[in-house]
Image 1 (tube, rainbow, N blue to C red):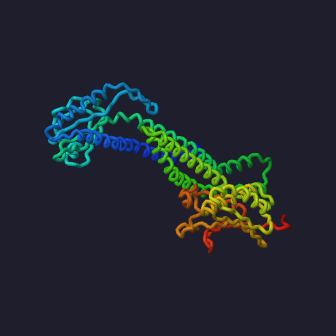
Image 2: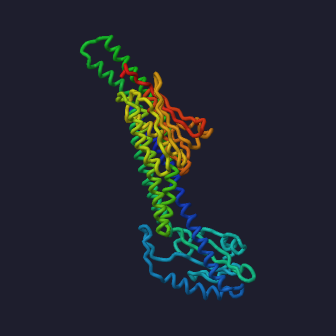
Image 3: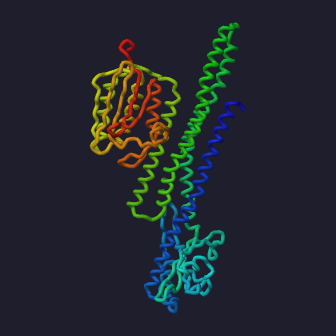
Length: 484
């Protein structure tokens, strides 16, 4: 196997193991969440039935007759009902709820299945705790059905004139919601597989990038073999050029290793939160609920999916930008027309919160660069200023022309930068909550601006203004008249 293939397979295996472990943890967490949800419903049902019994006013002596007269016809009719409920593709055709009522001594006076009346249930945890006035629950093998599954029980005390006169225990087989667990796992696997495919493309790109220096050696060998005559100076020049190219690419590859590790680790961390939100909303959608609540949870899923997509898209853009050593196209760019156009476009974004945008550019200046990248950089700074400006505030965009450089500054009058975030604002994936919405961005905008500034041999800074708010400054080398 070639060195290229070994490196590629190694990276692929490392990533597959990491994603596999994450998916294993997520899938293992689904079943306990469904059990918690089912237990919560059983608690309410148990207390509902206890309240129905208490409404008949039984005491310790009359509990058995009251329960038999109240519950037996209800459950006989309930079990005889015909139903066909389509619950997200699972067809439910029978009632699986079970109920037992015990007297103060723990002896069964009513069993909805008619199999345990007269038995002593005082040893069961749910019954024992309920008779003591505490919360009682248990999960036991299903002795009345499939022995391979189990039943969840929750008990509630029945109170009479003299205190607790008995307890009602409600049970539901675990297999009754097993189909929903399986479906939730399938959906989680689908989301995981989609993220694997997206990151796999990144792994392939990085793999080719890392092994390129080995290919340079093979290229040089082929070049030597193709020469008709031996010329030491010519071969030496070609060898030096090959070594220099290999060094540059190996340096970038070594840096790329840590970048790739940081990207995968941070991306996994950032995606975990929206994935958990999607999973939680998907689980709740399996339960009966009002249509308004259902639409709200569907909206949550849509918003979190868009958040993941935006995060992946911005990360791919930033990775592509970081791979450049220099601009592919550099041309003179007049800054004042560019800023005027950006202000016109951004004013509409400030209208909902009545934010005005002012431009101060008394004279024009030119820089050498990529107009599209410069537009993105200043546009990102404007977006940040709008996000952190208070309602009715003002954003000031200014162009300052100096002998050898130009400064494009964007100032807002928001809360400014907290002390703890002063040295972190340009880190990838670091973001502060927007004051008006308390939401965070992808945390890649300022990193994107920093990369664009460095490609243009400039720099970007962000600091608090003396009069309040924050000022972002993009500094670029000025293109003089002679050079233009």
